[in-house]
Length: 227
Image (cartoon, rainbow, N blue to C red; front, side, top):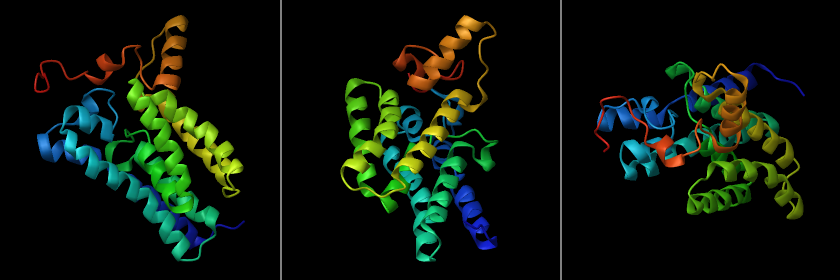
């Protein structure tokens, strides 16, 4: 396993492309909002849906998928080893979650994960989207997103998926867990019982409080544009 100069360029390209914050740009250009100050504070399609315009989730979501799919596709077209092409897609996910252009405050990477699966194993998309749909119908997709990454290797093994399904899922799971706990640098409560509770909520529900709707509705003090 060797990483040469062009391999590093491909991975760097993936990171920089993944760092393009389409959700942030949609909020700024369409409504003059910094969506990092609203709801969960993530640079994500869900915050665009909640606080900018619902229809914009479609172009933002598609662009987030493509910015991870393209480096993977490009790497395969240029005859890089599959693991290097996938690494470029994971670099795009890291760029999405910790974008260089926004002080490393980004999204959660689910769209970019879909982009990687789209190129290397489209059934992974079907599996993830099925779990997310169930979560959406039940009013909270965050736990189901986590579970989908845990069980995709089982699905892949059962139906003849590629050998890299397990390590790729584990890499996606690690990125997700780190981002949820880090939470764009939100401070943790100083006391241990409260801190443990917040860390648990972040890990499982991707938020700091129990109420999902209340978390999504948060906005800057004095801003009543959504209400």
